[in-house]
Length: 398
Image (cartoon, rainbow, N blue to C red):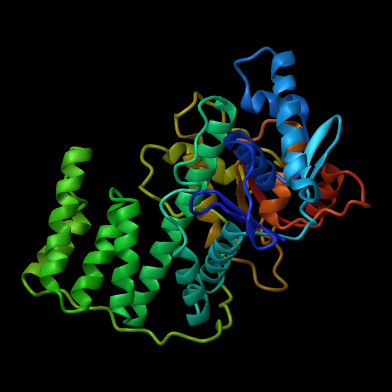
Protein backbone atom coordinates (compact mmCIF):
# COMPACT_ATOMS: atom_id res chain seq x y z
CA UNK A 1 0.00 0.00 0.00
CA UNK A 2 1.17 3.51 -0.86
CA UNK A 3 0.46 6.33 1.62
CA UNK A 4 0.98 9.90 0.41
CA UNK A 5 1.13 13.00 2.60
CA UNK A 6 0.20 16.32 0.99
CA UNK A 7 -1.12 18.37 3.93
CA UNK A 8 2.30 18.45 5.63
CA UNK A 9 5.75 18.22 3.98
CA UNK A 10 5.63 15.61 1.21
CA UNK A 11 6.25 12.05 2.37
CA UNK A 12 5.69 8.57 0.97
CA UNK A 13 5.11 5.38 2.93
CA UNK A 14 5.29 2.20 0.85
CA UNK A 15 4.22 -1.02 2.56
CA UNK A 16 4.63 0.63 5.99
CA UNK A 17 8.18 1.80 5.23
CA UNK A 18 9.39 5.34 4.35
CA UNK A 19 10.01 5.59 0.62
CA UNK A 20 12.13 8.22 -1.12
CA UNK A 21 11.84 9.33 -4.72
CA UNK A 22 15.01 10.29 -6.63
CA UNK A 23 14.32 14.04 -6.82
CA UNK A 24 11.92 16.84 -5.93
CA UNK A 25 10.86 16.99 -9.58
CA UNK A 26 9.93 13.29 -9.47
CA UNK A 27 7.80 14.04 -6.42
CA UNK A 28 6.19 16.95 -8.27
CA UNK A 29 5.34 14.71 -11.22
CA UNK A 30 3.73 12.14 -8.91
CA UNK A 31 1.68 14.85 -7.18
CA UNK A 32 0.47 16.25 -10.50
CA UNK A 33 -0.54 12.82 -11.83
CA UNK A 34 -2.23 11.97 -8.53
CA UNK A 35 -4.33 15.15 -8.49
CA UNK A 36 -5.21 14.88 -12.19
CA UNK A 37 -6.09 11.20 -12.68
CA UNK A 38 -6.33 11.00 -16.45
CA UNK A 39 -3.73 10.27 -19.15
CA UNK A 40 -1.36 13.18 -19.82
CA UNK A 41 0.59 13.42 -23.03
CA UNK A 42 4.36 13.57 -22.79
CA UNK A 43 4.36 16.91 -24.60
CA UNK A 44 2.06 18.46 -21.99
CA UNK A 45 4.12 17.10 -19.10
CA UNK A 46 7.38 18.25 -20.66
CA UNK A 47 5.98 21.76 -21.04
CA UNK A 48 4.69 21.68 -17.46
CA UNK A 49 8.19 21.17 -16.04
CA UNK A 50 10.51 22.63 -18.70
CA UNK A 51 8.56 25.31 -20.53
CA UNK A 52 11.75 27.36 -20.98
CA UNK A 53 13.56 24.60 -22.92
CA UNK A 54 13.20 23.50 -26.56
CA UNK A 55 10.66 20.69 -26.78
CA UNK A 56 13.21 18.05 -27.81
CA UNK A 57 15.37 18.80 -24.77
CA UNK A 58 12.32 18.95 -22.48
CA UNK A 59 11.07 15.57 -23.76
CA UNK A 60 14.51 14.08 -23.13
CA UNK A 61 14.44 15.29 -19.55
CA UNK A 62 10.92 13.90 -19.15
CA UNK A 63 12.02 10.45 -20.34
CA UNK A 64 14.52 10.31 -17.49
CA UNK A 65 11.92 11.57 -15.02
CA UNK A 66 9.33 9.00 -16.10
CA UNK A 67 11.90 6.21 -15.96
CA UNK A 68 12.75 7.17 -12.39
CA UNK A 69 9.09 7.29 -11.42
CA UNK A 70 8.35 3.91 -13.03
CA UNK A 71 11.31 2.33 -11.27
CA UNK A 72 10.24 3.72 -7.89
CA UNK A 73 6.47 3.19 -8.12
CA UNK A 74 5.78 0.86 -11.01
CA UNK A 75 2.40 -0.56 -9.83
CA UNK A 76 1.06 2.91 -9.10
CA UNK A 77 1.75 4.64 -12.42
CA UNK A 78 1.01 3.67 -16.00
CA UNK A 79 3.55 5.01 -18.48
CA UNK A 80 3.34 4.48 -22.24
CA UNK A 81 5.15 5.93 -25.23
CA UNK A 82 2.44 8.57 -25.49
CA UNK A 83 1.29 9.38 -21.95
CA UNK A 84 1.55 8.93 -18.20
CA UNK A 85 -1.24 8.26 -15.68
CA UNK A 86 -1.58 7.61 -11.97
CA UNK A 87 -3.22 4.23 -11.38
CA UNK A 88 -6.28 5.28 -9.38
CA UNK A 89 -7.34 1.63 -9.04
CA UNK A 90 -4.19 0.79 -7.07
CA UNK A 91 -4.00 0.40 -3.29
CA UNK A 92 -3.14 3.88 -2.06
CA UNK A 93 -4.23 6.50 0.46
CA UNK A 94 -3.83 10.29 0.48
CA UNK A 95 -4.30 12.37 3.62
CA UNK A 96 -5.92 15.16 1.60
CA UNK A 97 -8.80 12.87 0.56
CA UNK A 98 -10.28 12.74 4.07
CA UNK A 99 -10.19 16.53 4.39
CA UNK A 100 -11.78 17.10 0.98
CA UNK A 101 -14.49 14.54 1.75
CA UNK A 102 -15.28 16.10 5.12
CA UNK A 103 -15.45 19.59 3.61
CA UNK A 104 -17.80 18.35 0.88
CA UNK A 105 -20.10 16.62 3.39
CA UNK A 106 -20.16 19.76 5.54
CA UNK A 107 -21.07 22.00 2.63
CA UNK A 108 -23.75 19.55 1.50
CA UNK A 109 -25.42 19.41 4.93
CA UNK A 110 -25.43 23.19 5.28
CA UNK A 111 -26.77 23.72 1.76
CA UNK A 112 -29.51 21.13 2.18
CA UNK A 113 -30.47 21.64 5.82
CA UNK A 114 -28.93 24.88 7.05
CA UNK A 115 -27.08 23.11 9.89
CA UNK A 116 -24.56 20.41 10.76
CA UNK A 117 -24.93 17.27 12.82
CA UNK A 118 -22.61 16.70 15.76
CA UNK A 119 -20.95 13.82 13.92
CA UNK A 120 -20.19 15.91 10.84
CA UNK A 121 -18.83 18.75 12.97
CA UNK A 122 -16.57 16.35 14.87
CA UNK A 123 -15.29 14.77 11.66
CA UNK A 124 -14.62 18.16 10.10
CA UNK A 125 -12.77 19.39 13.18
CA UNK A 126 -10.56 16.30 13.17
CA UNK A 127 -9.88 16.58 9.43
CA UNK A 128 -8.96 20.27 9.68
CA UNK A 129 -6.29 19.48 12.27
CA UNK A 130 -4.03 18.16 9.53
CA UNK A 131 -4.04 21.40 7.53
CA UNK A 132 -0.88 23.44 8.15
CA UNK A 133 -1.65 26.61 6.21
CA UNK A 134 -1.13 25.45 2.64
CA UNK A 135 -1.02 22.37 0.46
CA UNK A 136 2.48 20.84 0.39
CA UNK A 137 4.06 23.43 2.71
CA UNK A 138 7.58 24.39 1.65
CA UNK A 139 7.34 22.48 -1.64
CA UNK A 140 8.76 24.29 -4.69
CA UNK A 141 10.85 23.75 -7.81
CA UNK A 142 13.65 25.99 -9.04
CA UNK A 143 12.28 25.65 -12.58
CA UNK A 144 8.94 24.70 -14.11
CA UNK A 145 6.64 27.69 -14.28
CA UNK A 146 3.70 25.57 -15.43
CA UNK A 147 3.87 23.32 -12.37
CA UNK A 148 4.33 26.33 -10.08
CA UNK A 149 1.19 27.97 -11.47
CA UNK A 150 -0.80 24.75 -11.13
CA UNK A 151 0.34 24.22 -7.53
CA UNK A 152 -0.50 27.82 -6.65
CA UNK A 153 -4.04 27.29 -7.96
CA UNK A 154 -4.41 24.04 -6.00
CA UNK A 155 -3.18 25.74 -2.85
CA UNK A 156 -5.59 28.65 -3.27
CA UNK A 157 -8.52 26.30 -3.91
CA UNK A 158 -7.83 24.25 -0.78
CA UNK A 159 -7.11 27.31 1.38
CA UNK A 160 -10.46 28.82 0.39
CA UNK A 161 -12.31 25.60 1.27
CA UNK A 162 -10.54 25.29 4.62
CA UNK A 163 -11.37 28.90 5.51
CA UNK A 164 -15.02 28.23 4.65
CA UNK A 165 -14.96 25.03 6.72
CA UNK A 166 -13.57 26.82 9.77
CA UNK A 167 -16.21 29.53 9.37
CA UNK A 168 -18.95 26.89 9.15
CA UNK A 169 -17.65 25.05 12.19
CA UNK A 170 -17.22 28.14 14.38
CA UNK A 171 -20.69 29.38 13.39
CA UNK A 172 -22.27 26.07 14.38
CA UNK A 173 -20.51 26.09 17.75
CA UNK A 174 -21.79 29.61 18.39
CA UNK A 175 -25.34 28.49 17.60
CA UNK A 176 -25.00 25.40 19.81
CA UNK A 177 -23.60 27.38 22.74
CA UNK A 178 -20.28 25.50 22.63
CA UNK A 179 -18.30 28.73 22.82
CA UNK A 180 -14.86 27.43 23.80
CA UNK A 181 -14.80 25.04 20.85
CA UNK A 182 -16.00 27.85 18.60
CA UNK A 183 -13.24 30.18 19.81
CA UNK A 184 -10.60 27.59 18.88
CA UNK A 185 -11.93 27.29 15.32
CA UNK A 186 -12.44 31.04 14.88
CA UNK A 187 -8.89 31.72 16.06
CA UNK A 188 -7.58 29.39 13.36
CA UNK A 189 -9.84 31.18 10.89
CA UNK A 190 -8.44 34.66 11.60
CA UNK A 191 -4.90 33.26 11.62
CA UNK A 192 -5.35 31.78 8.15
CA UNK A 193 -7.23 34.80 6.78
CA UNK A 194 -6.51 37.83 8.99
CA UNK A 195 -8.22 40.27 6.60
CA UNK A 196 -11.49 38.31 6.55
CA UNK A 197 -13.55 40.65 8.71
CA UNK A 198 -16.37 38.13 9.15
CA UNK A 199 -13.89 35.93 11.04
CA UNK A 200 -13.15 38.71 13.50
CA UNK A 201 -16.88 39.37 13.93
CA UNK A 202 -17.45 35.70 14.67
CA UNK A 203 -14.58 35.52 17.15
CA UNK A 204 -15.82 38.66 18.92
CA UNK A 205 -19.26 37.09 19.35
CA UNK A 206 -17.81 33.82 20.63
CA UNK A 207 -15.61 35.59 23.18
CA UNK A 208 -18.54 37.72 24.34
CA UNK A 209 -20.92 34.76 24.51
CA UNK A 210 -18.37 32.98 26.70
CA UNK A 211 -18.44 35.95 29.08
CA UNK A 212 -15.03 37.28 28.02
CA UNK A 213 -16.03 40.79 26.93
CA UNK A 214 -12.51 42.18 27.30
CA UNK A 215 -11.20 39.56 24.86
CA UNK A 216 -13.99 40.45 22.40
CA UNK A 217 -13.14 44.16 22.59
CA UNK A 218 -9.44 43.41 22.18
CA UNK A 219 -10.26 41.36 19.08
CA UNK A 220 -11.97 44.39 17.57
CA UNK A 221 -8.88 46.49 18.23
CA UNK A 222 -6.68 43.90 16.49
CA UNK A 223 -9.08 43.77 13.54
CA UNK A 224 -9.14 47.57 13.22
CA UNK A 225 -5.35 47.76 13.39
CA UNK A 226 -4.92 45.08 10.71
CA UNK A 227 -7.39 46.70 8.33
CA UNK A 228 -5.73 50.08 8.78
CA UNK A 229 -2.20 48.77 8.30
CA UNK A 230 -2.90 46.45 5.37
CA UNK A 231 -5.77 48.13 3.52
CA UNK A 232 -6.02 51.64 4.92
CA UNK A 233 -9.73 51.23 5.71
CA UNK A 234 -11.78 51.21 8.94
CA UNK A 235 -13.80 48.18 10.09
CA UNK A 236 -17.20 47.56 8.53
CA UNK A 237 -20.04 49.42 10.31
CA UNK A 238 -21.46 46.09 11.52
CA UNK A 239 -18.15 45.22 13.20
CA UNK A 240 -18.05 48.61 14.89
CA UNK A 241 -21.68 48.25 15.96
CA UNK A 242 -20.84 44.90 17.59
CA UNK A 243 -17.96 46.54 19.42
CA UNK A 244 -20.06 49.48 20.63
CA UNK A 245 -22.86 47.24 21.89
CA UNK A 246 -20.44 44.96 23.69
CA UNK A 247 -18.60 47.91 25.22
CA UNK A 248 -21.77 49.38 26.78
CA UNK A 249 -23.26 46.02 27.75
CA UNK A 250 -26.01 46.10 25.12
CA UNK A 251 -25.09 42.84 23.34
CA UNK A 252 -27.05 39.65 23.92
CA UNK A 253 -25.69 36.21 23.20
CA UNK A 254 -27.69 34.14 20.69
CA UNK A 255 -30.08 31.58 22.15
CA UNK A 256 -28.32 28.19 21.82
CA UNK A 257 -29.86 25.70 19.41
CA UNK A 258 -30.00 21.99 20.13
CA UNK A 259 -27.37 20.17 18.09
CA UNK A 260 -28.86 17.14 16.36
CA UNK A 261 -27.28 13.74 15.95
CA UNK A 262 -29.01 13.32 12.59
CA UNK A 263 -29.99 15.74 9.88
CA UNK A 264 -33.60 16.84 10.09
CA UNK A 265 -35.82 16.69 7.03
CA UNK A 266 -35.17 19.63 4.72
CA UNK A 267 -37.90 22.19 4.21
CA UNK A 268 -39.76 22.62 0.96
CA UNK A 269 -37.70 25.74 0.24
CA UNK A 270 -34.31 24.08 0.79
CA UNK A 271 -31.39 25.55 -1.12
CA UNK A 272 -30.15 24.04 -4.34
CA UNK A 273 -27.04 21.86 -4.11
CA UNK A 274 -23.97 23.86 -5.12
CA UNK A 275 -20.25 24.31 -4.51
CA UNK A 276 -20.05 28.10 -4.69
CA UNK A 277 -17.75 29.70 -2.12
CA UNK A 278 -19.23 32.09 0.40
CA UNK A 279 -19.30 35.71 -0.69
CA UNK A 280 -16.14 37.32 0.67
CA UNK A 281 -17.34 40.90 0.03
CA UNK A 282 -20.34 42.63 -1.55
CA UNK A 283 -20.28 43.21 -5.30
CA UNK A 284 -20.87 46.81 -6.33
CA UNK A 285 -21.94 48.53 -9.55
CA UNK A 286 -23.13 45.43 -11.40
CA UNK A 287 -26.90 45.75 -11.02
CA UNK A 288 -27.47 46.09 -14.79
CA UNK A 289 -25.31 43.09 -15.64
CA UNK A 290 -26.91 40.98 -12.89
CA UNK A 291 -30.38 41.85 -14.17
CA UNK A 292 -29.39 40.83 -17.71
CA UNK A 293 -27.92 37.56 -16.47
CA UNK A 294 -31.07 36.83 -14.45
CA UNK A 295 -33.15 37.13 -17.62
CA UNK A 296 -30.86 34.85 -19.62
CA UNK A 297 -30.53 32.30 -16.80
CA UNK A 298 -34.30 32.00 -16.62
CA UNK A 299 -34.72 31.50 -20.37
CA UNK A 300 -34.81 27.79 -21.35
CA UNK A 301 -33.90 28.74 -24.94
CA UNK A 302 -30.49 30.05 -23.82
CA UNK A 303 -28.21 27.05 -23.14
CA UNK A 304 -24.93 29.00 -23.05
CA UNK A 305 -23.94 32.40 -21.67
CA UNK A 306 -20.43 33.77 -22.22
CA UNK A 307 -19.07 36.64 -20.12
CA UNK A 308 -16.24 38.44 -21.92
CA UNK A 309 -13.81 41.02 -20.58
CA UNK A 310 -10.16 41.70 -19.70
CA UNK A 311 -8.51 39.59 -17.04
CA UNK A 312 -9.12 40.72 -13.47
CA UNK A 313 -12.24 42.74 -14.25
CA UNK A 314 -14.46 40.49 -12.13
CA UNK A 315 -16.11 38.11 -14.59
CA UNK A 316 -15.99 35.13 -12.21
CA UNK A 317 -17.34 37.18 -9.29
CA UNK A 318 -20.20 38.43 -11.47
CA UNK A 319 -21.10 34.91 -12.59
CA UNK A 320 -21.03 33.58 -9.02
CA UNK A 321 -23.18 36.44 -7.76
CA UNK A 322 -25.77 35.78 -10.46
CA UNK A 323 -25.75 32.07 -9.58
CA UNK A 324 -26.09 32.74 -5.85
CA UNK A 325 -29.43 34.47 -6.41
CA UNK A 326 -30.77 31.16 -7.75
CA UNK A 327 -29.63 28.99 -4.83
CA UNK A 328 -32.38 29.98 -2.40
CA UNK A 329 -34.92 31.29 -4.92
CA UNK A 330 -38.51 29.99 -4.47
CA UNK A 331 -38.86 26.51 -5.94
CA UNK A 332 -41.84 25.06 -7.75
CA UNK A 333 -43.82 22.54 -5.75
CA UNK A 334 -44.95 19.22 -7.18
CA UNK A 335 -47.49 19.63 -9.94
CA UNK A 336 -46.66 23.23 -10.75
CA UNK A 337 -45.62 24.08 -14.27
CA UNK A 338 -43.23 26.85 -15.25
CA UNK A 339 -41.09 27.29 -18.33
CA UNK A 340 -38.26 28.87 -16.34
CA UNK A 341 -35.20 26.78 -15.56
CA UNK A 342 -35.01 25.50 -11.98
CA UNK A 343 -31.48 23.97 -11.98
CA UNK A 344 -32.86 21.46 -9.48
CA UNK A 345 -29.81 19.21 -9.85
CA UNK A 346 -27.39 21.88 -8.72
CA UNK A 347 -25.19 24.85 -9.52
CA UNK A 348 -21.48 24.10 -9.78
CA UNK A 349 -18.32 26.12 -10.36
CA UNK A 350 -15.63 24.26 -12.30
CA UNK A 351 -12.12 25.75 -12.47
CA UNK A 352 -10.74 25.05 -15.94
CA UNK A 353 -7.88 27.57 -15.88
CA UNK A 354 -5.36 25.12 -14.34
CA UNK A 355 -5.94 22.54 -17.10
CA UNK A 356 -3.32 22.30 -19.81
CA UNK A 357 -5.05 20.00 -22.31
CA UNK A 358 -8.56 19.67 -23.71
CA UNK A 359 -8.81 16.00 -22.71
CA UNK A 360 -8.84 17.05 -19.05
CA UNK A 361 -12.01 19.16 -19.33
CA UNK A 362 -14.60 16.36 -19.14
CA UNK A 363 -12.91 14.63 -16.16
CA UNK A 364 -12.65 17.97 -14.34
CA UNK A 365 -16.36 18.67 -14.79
CA UNK A 366 -17.26 15.09 -13.87
CA UNK A 367 -15.25 15.24 -10.65
CA UNK A 368 -17.16 18.33 -9.51
CA UNK A 369 -20.70 17.21 -10.38
CA UNK A 370 -20.33 13.55 -9.37
CA UNK A 371 -20.26 11.91 -12.80
CA UNK A 372 -18.38 8.62 -12.57
CA UNK A 373 -16.85 7.46 -15.82
CA UNK A 374 -16.78 3.82 -16.87
CA UNK A 375 -13.89 2.56 -19.01
CA UNK A 376 -16.23 0.40 -21.11
CA UNK A 377 -18.87 3.06 -21.83
CA UNK A 378 -17.18 5.24 -24.44
CA UNK A 379 -15.01 8.33 -24.16
CA UNK A 380 -15.41 10.64 -21.17
CA UNK A 381 -16.93 13.53 -23.12
CA UNK A 382 -19.70 11.29 -24.47
CA UNK A 383 -20.39 9.88 -20.99
CA UNK A 384 -20.50 13.39 -19.51
CA UNK A 385 -22.99 14.61 -22.11
CA UNK A 386 -25.17 11.58 -21.45
CA UNK A 387 -25.04 12.26 -17.71
CA UNK A 388 -26.03 15.91 -18.17
CA UNK A 389 -28.78 15.23 -20.69
CA UNK A 390 -31.24 14.05 -18.04
CA UNK A 391 -30.37 16.74 -15.48
CA UNK A 392 -31.12 20.41 -14.92
CA UNK A 393 -27.81 21.97 -13.87
CA UNK A 394 -26.05 25.30 -14.11
CA UNK A 395 -22.31 24.94 -14.74
CA UNK A 396 -19.99 27.90 -14.28
CA UNK A 397 -16.94 27.03 -16.37
CA UNK A 398 -14.16 29.38 -15.33
